[in-house]
Each structure stands twice: as structure tokens, then as C-alpha cells.
Image (cartoon, rainbow, N blue to C red; front, side):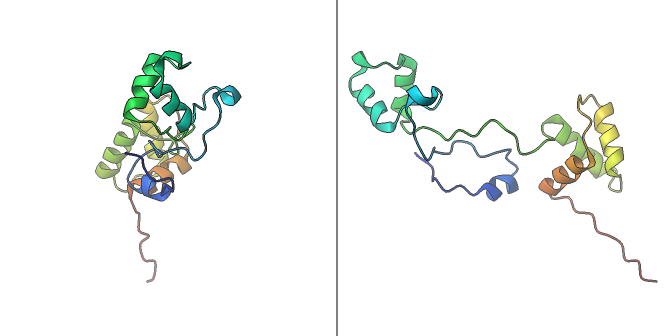
Length: 141
């Protein structure tokens, strides 16, 4: 079943997904122009109707029988720098040490086997996505 073309990108971010997936492309282009762009829906239907003269592979034809609409190319670029195991470690560390600074979290993640030393902004951004909030104490005396 095809999905809607208007994508709520904020909804994906709020639900914890990295990036939108399985979104239908808005524009189909000829395969001779880009190679990876794919065939149009009309071309796919013609090849499915006459598979003997189709330039596409048998695997493509079988895939098109299940879903004929091409998916949107999302660029394989993650909107979130901290993901996977490091994100879980950040959650656990923040639960155990709720007053830890971003530098302490950075050091913990790096010492836990991360190959990347994250910046403070990466930590703040990941915590914002996760919904962690830090409230500033009142300073009136």
C-alpha cells in the first residue's frame, strides 16, 4: 500500500526514527539519466505485462509484483549522530547519574569503546530527541 507523499519529518524525529523510510518518490526519472533513479511506474507496468522483452532483471520484476511504486531516495544520511549502542549507553548513564555533565558523558562513551569522540552539541541534541530535560534551579535567595 503506497504511503502519502507529504511526510511529517518532525513526526519521524519525535518517534525516535533516524530518518523517514519507505516514502514514495515525488518524481520518477528515466534510468538512462541517473541509473539509480529507476523506471517510471508506466515502464514497470509495461515490463510486467510483457516480461519476455523487459530489459529489467527477473528479480526486479518479482519485486515490482509486490510494490510497483518506487520509494523515495532518502540519501542514507542519518539526522542523528549518536545512535545504536552509544545511545543506549547515554540513556543508562543519564539514569544512573542524572546530574552528569556533557563532558562526563562524552568521556564515558569514548571509554566504553566508541570510535568517535562526540561533541557537547551531539550529547545535547541526542538528549533533546530522547526527551531528557534539565531544569535550572531557582537562584533567588
